[in-house]
Each structure stands twice: as structure tokens, then as C-alpha cells.
Length: 124
Image (cartoon, rainbow, N blue to C red):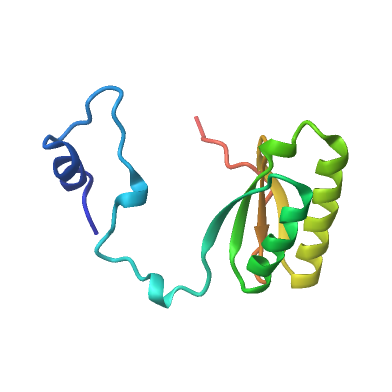
């Protein structure tokens, strides 16, 4: 596992990030990554039109967790309603779950994974 300081040094040559800079986590690899042995994958999907939901069903049936961004259709209530019904049916068919996790984001899970709808709040 890489430590934060080695990640920062490798990408920026120092132990601190410069203000306004960021780490591209998509290009990073970690020593203990075991993607080959993973039973499922978390996928990010964007819905541009309601017909795109069909492609998500394949991912759910193969056991992947899908984070769905529906920003493109968020202003069309009929499309959002139809997408919601379709995703609920997919979750029901696969024995999984579906829930909103943020504005314009949904999470679709496969069988055996439930979404807890209670937020974990920090204790003071």
C-alpha cells in the first residue's frame, strides 16, 4: 500500500500539494490492488436518455455495483420517473437494491448487497 507522502512525492516532488493542484486518482496504482480476485466492480455510469438503462441491467446481472449519474435527464420528470421504475425492476429481478445517494446520483447494487438509507453523522 502506498503512503500519502510517497504518492505526493511521486506526483509533485514534495510532501504537500500545491494549492489548486490535484491528484489524478485514475492514474494511480496501489501495491495491494487485487482486481483480478474481485467478485464485483463498482462502475460509474451516465444516463443520457432513458434507453441507456438497458445497458445498466447487464452490469447489475453480472454482479457489479453501479453508480448512476442522471444529470442529463434530471429536468425531464417523465424520463426520471421511467428510469426510476426501470432501475427498481432491475433491482427486484436481481435481488439487489437501488437508492438515491446524492443529487442526480443513484446506486444500483446486485444480489446480496443492501443500501443503508441512514446517514452516518459525526458525533460531537
